[in-house]
Length: 214
Image 1 (cartoon, rainbow, N blue to C red):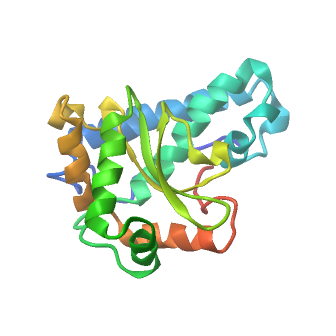
Image 2 (tube, helix red, strand yellow; image 1 turned 90 degrees about the vertical axis):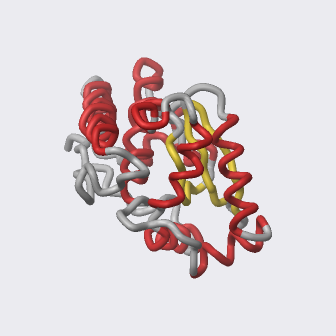
Image 3 (spheres, helix red, strand yellow; image 1 turned 60 degrees about the vertical axis):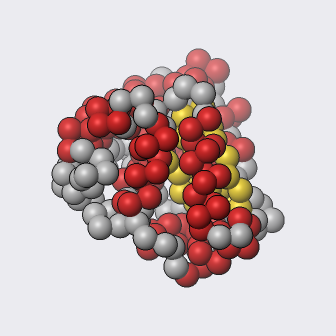
């Protein structure tokens, strides 16, 4: 069964003024759609991989045949990353986190403002295209990390609790080259309810969140 592009859970303009409608349309309908198309094209060469989820593919890239490994890494990662990204944002989102994720942030980083500063700094310093993440480690702790291109913490044995896209296509139309401004504004659309669901999935010992990746 072919991987499919999930619909946006809100209108293109729903995240304005933080993220403009044109960026959302291009980001979802063009960029994410291209990752899905290219992932499916790569997997056509190896039908035995057709039953695997995108998460399973990028979790063990060494098991992917050499001739499509780069395509699966880039496009499978792009599909997983963006499927998460749309869900962890919502209209009238933002504010301070509550619940279990708030406790985890306080435990590891002291307070939410210090966490945001460190998260934004990691995103701003990611050279070129990539992502900045809060990832869960096997022992139950959490860490801030960044990855290049469409790499996902899953490939390093970590759990992607949430992440922000710092590819230029995610922000350039509105923010131009002002990535730190975009990173600061982005907290205004974070869906903390969804982030808490993902954190609880991590704490329950699941290998990855329940993503609608097919």
